Length: 100
Image 1 (cartoon, helix red, strand yellow):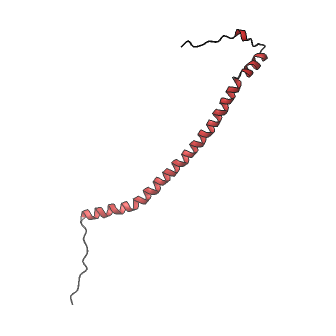
Image 2 (cartoon, rainbow, N blue to C red; image 1 turned 90 degrees about the vertical axis):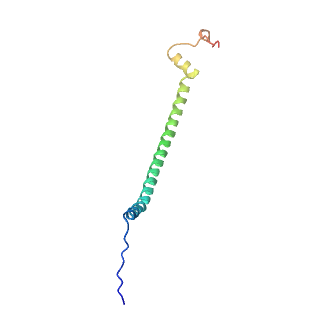
Image 3 (tube, rainbow, N blue to C red; image 1 turned 180 degrees about the vertical axis):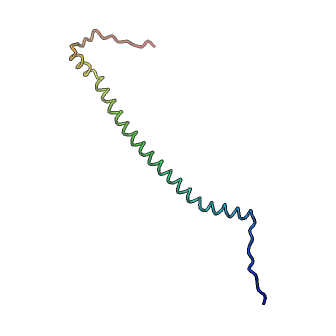
């Protein structure tokens, strides 16, 4: 009987590089996936927080616009005029119209 020597499979340099890149790709793909999902989640949270701030500010703006309308009403103007000792005289009001 003859002894068989174990043949070692020899890889070419290009094959080693390809296998190395493939191994890196296998490790990097899940890591990149987790990283991008994390960024997406963080961005989504920031978006929801920004929407909440916008809704809050919109409510404040609406409230302030209502207050402006109250203060600019004719009744309020007459009240302030009376407090200052002024009177409302309709004959002194001149209406200006646009001639266009």
